[in-house]
Every structure is written in structure tokens, then in C-alpha cells.
Image (cartoon, rainbow, N blue to C red; front, side):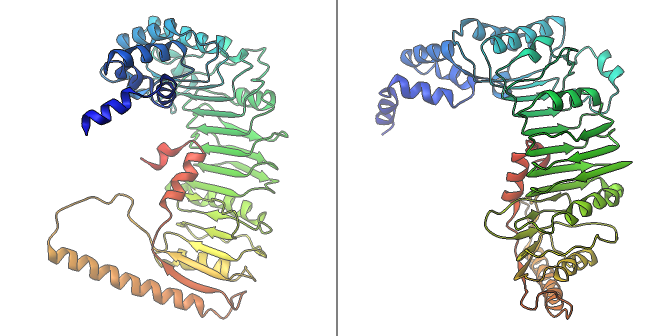
Length: 445
């Protein structure tokens, strides 16, 4: 059976093998060359004309920085492809020679009309808490070359842990649709220039960009998805987004915030750190008051996330907050409310009542009990299992009693609204939301 399987693989046409190689990391293409003479030839041919180049974790394994740089340079030297579709790089420059090689790699990609780049420099050095002066004084931090910003073919740009130095004559990436900046040294004026000059931009991610002091997205942009995650020094947030469909904000203290014209918003995440939660919650309530007309919303809160459901009017909220008087609004189109992470606390009850009193055509409210995201396999005795099961049963009874109390609330706006207690099943949809916003690493921490 094993020999038969081997023959089947060996008999695959070259075109099929090239297709397989195009879907796997570059390191695996190189490894495949050791299988047989034929595979060695097919692997060499593929590297010679590969348009998707992936030099990240797998490629760097068991290599020193010098070996990594030399091997990558050798691969690019044999590449004859006229067009590069994707170029991914994870590399920590240790000296000027490394930086010089990294610049040559970027020049290679741009000279071949690359459409998507994903560059992560300095992976072991965290610069998002540092001032600009500190960043520029760090030998290891990589500054992007000016010629990168002349590219007219880039559609997706993902940059991590580097210095973004826009040239004065920067005229924008003519084709750019997605821009992700993570722990990048980008200033307020640079952000404004990017927004003004990248006319086709639809997705913007700003994650832990510590040099930003204010984030203003006020021009008439095409932005459909916006992520602002823990840009610690940004105390001003102003967003006018008539085209924004999905918004993720996680912030600390804000001296000023203004969010308006979110008329097409379908997804929302707003979160913050501990004691600063109340201030950002006000921002959420301000957005919520403008969405009373929306037919379909999903919301996860605690860290709080909204995710759309195409055909149902579903509202999902993971909630943990200090007392803040909510903005009053009526949800005339809301039919289903799902409260996730429902423990039966006073905040949970307050939130449930908030919607029960303001949704006149509400049909169902689902109270989703929490599920541990960090379950560990441990050896426990039968007595411990029995005790744990007993506690869970008591908790369920209490939560069920609270649901019954909500159901019998005489002030419900909808007399037909039902209250149901359910087990958690939202984790995958939450991860999907973070994936769409290019911050799944936050969720998986």
C-alpha cells in the first residue's frame, strides 16, 4: 500500500506539482527536493519561476540570521519570474549588512510588480512603547526605503515593527486597497498623507502604533473596514465613516472622541483596558445610538465585538462595565438579541433589560453562558468532578431563574419576546471577526 501511494505521487504531472508548491511555504518546496531526482528538478523549476515567495517562520527554522539572509538571496538570484504576486518576509536585521540585503529583497519585489507584501522586521524587539527618538536610535530597527513608496502595483501592504518614513513627494500607492501597520513608527502627518493619497484604500489596520497621538479619519474615503488597536499614545479619535461596514476599536484613555456618519456599519468591536473601560464605553453608546435603524448587527462585548449575520437581526454582546447611564434609543428592527458571556451579574441583567425595553418587535433573547477559552487537561478525582458538576448545576439554576425574571418583566416593549438560556458556541465566529481585521494574534494570545 505504501509503495502504491509512492507511485501515485511520483506519477503526478509537473503542472499538478507546481500547483501544490504554489500553495505551500517556500521552505517546504526546498525540502521536497530531497524526495527524488524528479522532485528535485520540479522543485528547482518552481523556485525559478515562483510568484508567491514566503520567507517566514518555517523558512527561518534552524538557520542563523546570516544563513537566512544568504539562502534567501540565493533563491531570489535564480528567480526569473516576471511578476511577483506575494512576498512575505520575517527577518530581524542585526547589522548594516542585513539591512542592505533586506533593501535589495524589497527592490527585487517592487521591480517585479509585486501586488502583496507582508514584511515583519525586528520580531524580537517591541518598539510600540518607544518615542520616535528611541526608535531611530535602535540599531536593529529597520527603516523602509523610499523607493517602496513609488510602487503602483501594490494592492495589499502589511508592515510590522519598522519605521515608516514617507518621502516628501509621496503621491500614494495607486492601487492600494489594504494597509496593515503593526508596531510601526508612523506619525499623525504620515497617516493623514496615506489616507489622502491612497484613493482606493478599503481596509486600514493600525495596531500598537505608539507614535500616533491623534487618529483622524475624516476625509471622504472608501474605507470599509477599520481597525484601531491599542495605539497607546493616541488620545484623540475622530472617525467619519459613511462607507465603513466593520469597525474595531480597542483603546485606553481618550481626551476627545468623535464618531459620526456610521450609517452603513454592520460590525463593531470596542474594548479597552480595565479601569479605562467606562470612557470608551461612552464611545460605544454614541455609536449604538446612531444604529437604531440597522436591521442586522452582532455584538461581542467584554472586549466587545459586533459581527454581522446576513439574514437575521441578531445582536450579540459580551458585557462587563461600570455603571454608565446609556444613551436612549429605540431598536425598531431588532428581532433577536444574543447576550454572550451571560453570568447573571447585575451588568448582565441591566444590559438585557436595556434591549427588552427598547425593541418593540423583539422575538427572542438568547443568554449564552460562558465557556472557558483556556481549558486544560488535568488529572482530577471523581470527587472533584462531582463537586464541579454540582456547582455548574447550581449556577445554571440561578441563571435560569434570572431568565424567567426577565421574561416576566412587565415593561417589555415586545410582549412576545422569549428568553432562552443556551451554551456557548460563539468562539469560532469571534475568531473569524478578528481574522477579518487582521488581528487574530490578539485573540489567540
